Length: 575
Image (cartoon, rainbow, N blue to C red; front, side, top):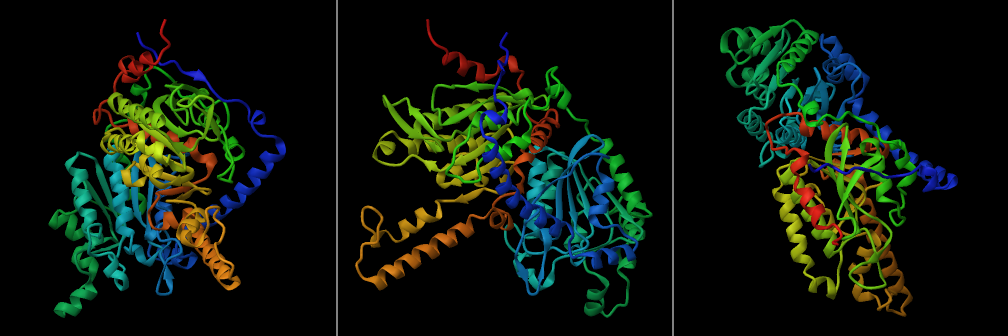
């Protein structure tokens, strides 16, 4: 009988980092993450207390108050898309979080995706990128087959910017296509309608399996003001499409409830009737264990300076249950570390870039820098990714990659072909894949390691992530290459020309550094969320539990018959 040979990895942080270095790294990281905390608080505040008071005066709860009532007591909400539209102004106003809150949340012991209009931001209007953010959450739910809860309180498009959110492939109408796809795949959708739901806000709940309306809610294609202008009829929106109409006449809603609290209570009851979690079954008799070393150690272990190195083993030791891990093909392609560990008792595959200088097994007595994709590492990663897909094991990618190896030998070894094989594998896998950009996410290495373009379920960044084709200094050298000699010095004796080239290179480098800011990526939806390093274990638990929750929606093989055992057997020493 094949068993999974998990072995201990990791050691106390004091053996890796001295006290002074640890304190310095934590201080630098805390400065970065304090910005993350401050900006998250700004988004969570919406348009501020004035608008919170307005919501309360209407007899309603704010969106975040509804969320707090909806989720299981004592559990945490894991938000995605927090910083969409960060720093972007529309006229004189901003749209914190694009006016939508999207979270992983536990309701009646089941992981769900909750999509909620922020009613403190222009009455829950849809801004540019609001539809894309909603659709992204729907895609996550569809891939994981998680129930979706819509907390609808939406006055339609933010009309001054309608041209940026109404048309196009991912415009507002695409939300309803996603509603339909979720329904087609049997994913439960529950909607609570809490306020003035106009146009798209009115369409959004209709395809849901259950629709609850409060006494002050209404769903209309066009509100009273528009009807008055178009047809000269004096009506109220509540009279046009309130619960009296849609529960008792049209049938577009199912149940009428007195207020927000009652609606939340009913939604929780509906979720309790959906399929229960399969996580205990897929633990195969194991229990959940904390890592032997705290996740907070990552603050000291992972340097904020991307040029400094750390141990991949030590990172994994802070993520896996009991700091136990089974490394696959440990002696081949050592720039990559691949293998299996448990997270909350559930098996996950891990793929991480090693850092530092390694022995080059393909060249006797040679060394090579890690953090780069070479032939053997690419082939090993592709084989491991395929095996995880065959065995039904979800994969967590931990990127810190500078790109592919380059040069004459790299081309002769066929890195383009091996890289294409890895990309094909990751493009066609059916198991859930999740990606974390620890620090560097550069060039085609970012693509090959299941970056956002290859549709992982979720991609996370940290406050020290740098996401770009190449670093600012390198790009500046490339851009001004014709002005430089073979040693990258300016090839001119004219002081004015030298000054102009230096200024141009500095400006180019500064612009690229700004582009690599993780908040820039999050604002334009090039990453799903920015998280503290110490939160990575908690997020890994979300990924594991949501991957296994929906029984029967994908193949999960018994560990005795994993393809990974075949790979391991073929790599054992002979004789």
